Image (tube, rainbow, N blue to C red; front, side, top):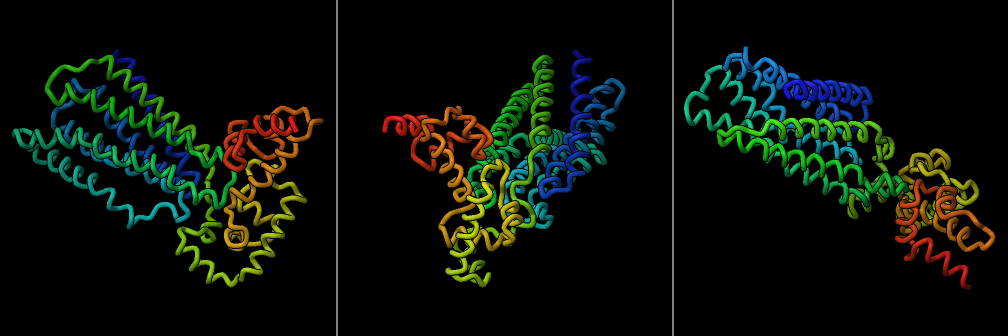
Length: 374
């Protein structure tokens, strides 16, 4: 059992250290939060694993100094995970130090208490012991609101993301929602595992071992998906996005484009989409449309929003759905629904079905059946 526990610690340490290095090297808007999250888990695995392996030889004073590093780190996990979700789905800059420092206040308080305990050993008194026990376990509850905020962010950011991206699968962020749920489940199990220790009872070692490997699995999934996730809002287009109705009006007033110019640009963009079949690229986004058309992203965004009353998602997928409907209505087109979806720019059949239903009010199968009966 001890060998399996040691292996889980070593595996987690290696995984998180590698993930932190890769996230830091990517230097994207989200990399600071992601690298910070994995760095905190790395420190927890390292300085928490050493006492586990050497607990028979370490004194109480030594354990107190190890907790100075391990315990405060745990209070950063929730804020960093939420910061990652927010940076991934926002149009602003990534790490904003002054604004984000307030989320580090619990960590700072716990660091001061842990350092004070290492110097003065006040956990020898009943009140001091209770205070130390509180700092050891309260991070589980402190992180819950941040998990909720991270999950909520995947829903509330959708309108902004649709201004620059037409990929339904990327905007759905289902992987992030599920991952937040998995991490939330891990923290719940962590809380359950701590109950015997808080009550002074003997815990079940097998449960602790299972939790360690489940945590490793959750961290592996986070690293796998997060490190492969492309930036949804490229830095060069952030200034072009309307961030609310009033903000959009003020921004568009400063742009210098009048309604006639918006209509002309929108018409040019529509002709380019039709003639070049640009919509057939499943990864087509605002940055690529700007490159192909020569218009800056801010002009494209304003032309679509004011000239056509559409966001980028609706504009591009309107062409995709129109092309798919022509194929589905053609009795000589024997391709499968998936083949048609891929040819029209959709990345998967599920994505095609979701967008088709949203924009036409029926499923592709219903549309094809209705077209064949005419």
